[in-house]
Length: 241
Image (tube, rainbow, N blue to C red; front, side, top):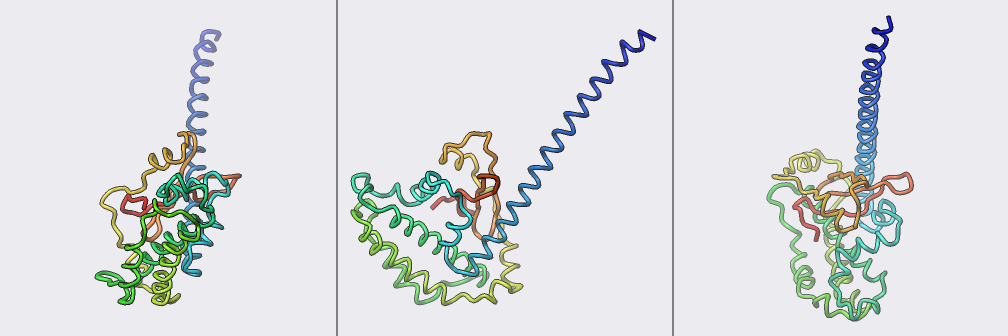
């Protein structure tokens, strides 16, 4: 009997330890799947919000992290770092944020327009002159003030964005052709570079990053104060902007 107990108890301990490890692993996977489901819901709300407003400003305000350092880092990665360090402190951060918002508004409007138009789409004819005005603007490195930044970038982006808005209707986003065009977008390879985003934001491997794909964009989310929030995004061409 004692011999049986000596053999049986260690064996049972191993079985229980294995079962416990399996349970914890399954629970962890289940928790991550639930977080991804929540992230997908946020992606749906985010793109719906843009279709409602045709403006990236509410997206940046309502869906992004609230941490000021991370928000500034995101704005600087897209535009702020293009400015001359000699003048950077003289340019109000709100002006730089306006360019960031205007830039992503333009790309989201272009994405929306492309998917509502389908294959072989052509930009609105009136965009030509407005786009040339933007591409012919001053180099950001030469900008010395927030006022100049608004004149050189925000006002020109606003002109472009307003042209695109006139060519988008709420009904277009509910059409079968729009849904089909979005579903048919194919990535030859994965474009969501999580490793690069971790590096850009100095994140450790312990921070879980979730990705959702909507239209032409990858949105990267992390948990902040118990809620999932976007901290950055990229084009589904692996470009950051």
